[in-house]
Length: 180
Image (cartoon, rainbow, N blue to C red):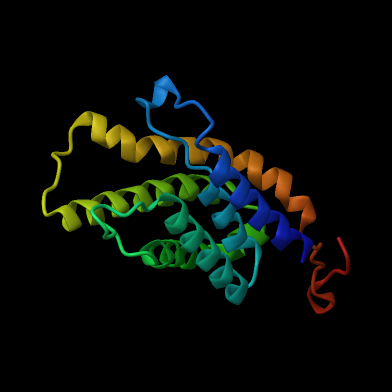
């Protein structure tokens, strides 16, 4: 329970803090998205029903925080991010056995890939709602890939800081071992 509350608080705090963090020049001025790293950590650390609750909280809070109405209507319907982050968290949860075995570098890379996919999905949805897509110039690609690169760089720190909060899992006694 403490681990879940810590992940939720970290996710919400990083969502609020990202507006105050400067955009790194090395990423082409792309903003930092660190809250998906907390979501994806939770996706591999918790059982699937808890992952769905976490994805719901992440998507809803992201929509409420970032979707301003334009001319009295929303460009992207509130709740769309719940589906995006729910799908990505579900895929990430599929890699949970690797996480439990301690093979974390795969998850760090996937944090970056999935963060970029979420930004790309939102970009495409806004273009669809406006019925005009901006050409994919190098600046646009940096706005899509930059948050993923930053998320992949932040993932090891977040994973290593949050992992001690998880309960220790012992080995199965019939398979040759007790507590590690």
